[in-house]
Image (cartoon, rainbow, N blue to C red; front, side):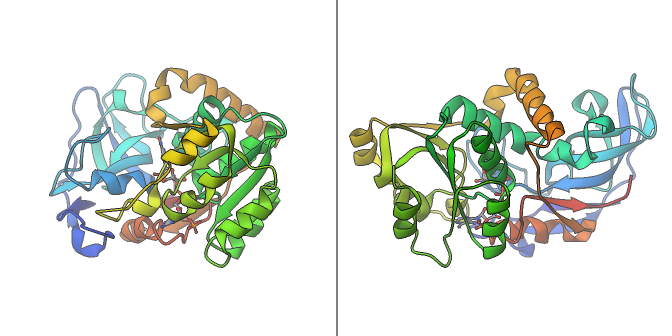
Length: 330
Ligand code: NDP
């Protein structure tokens, strides 16, 4: 029964030396609990923040304790009402092959809604992040220009499609030609490869009418290039800043003058802010998915022993769409 522990807090980029794969005890069943067998693990950029010490919107991971995060598992034994052997569930689970867990922290997945993995992205955390960030904070109007950074990732690729659904002009920014192609297929009107193009120049060409909504997943220099293009009353959705997660001292942003000139709004958020409205987001996302207006990409790495590498690869952009790790067949 393998598990992955955090043994040292990373200073910069996380590497194998910060973790340990160990043999855990056989889990014991008790009243109200189920024993789960891990099927899929979601690796997410926000987990990097939990590896640091200090106050945040979520508790830091403890040293010598397993990493935990969004996962899909199969119930193999149950002493909890409403759960039985064979149920497929999702929740926050430790990176451990077999776990004894309180059933009330789990949600059963309805396989009729789509492939079970969708509960970890388009019909789950990243889909809801895209939906509420764009619709509630960005509020794109038909004909407006929406720029999305980190556009080919799990959140970004959903934002691109949602902005297209509302009739906005969408410009995506991503880090490879393969990702550029994907974004064109998803309906982006223009796509910039920030690794091979001069971003400021390409943005000026791609946004002749300026920028009304900037959905920011990455921060850093890419964002610096967008601020001068903000239109009057533009909205910046500060969803992520992955370019700085592995940095101790990131300079900037020097955004103030641009906010004043454009009367723009910038708002950070975490998806949990919208917990009470999840049913609304879920309903819209599943409807668009069923109607074929929304689609998704997954990058699936196989094997428990490859979870860490899949996590590290988020920071070099190996993934297209949602990065998952498959541990077992249901
Ligand atoms: P992604 O699927 O987008 O994976 C991360 C991607 O970020 C990579 O594929 C890579 O794509 C890009 N990237 C990595 N390093 C850099 C860099 N230095 N500069 C620019 N781009 C980089 O992850 P998610 O969709 O899960 O998350 C996207 C963002 O949204 C993250 O910042 C995350 O923290 C945030 N987030 C926020 C939430 C909230 O509640 N506010 C909830 C969920 C996610 P490329 O090849 O294009 O570089």
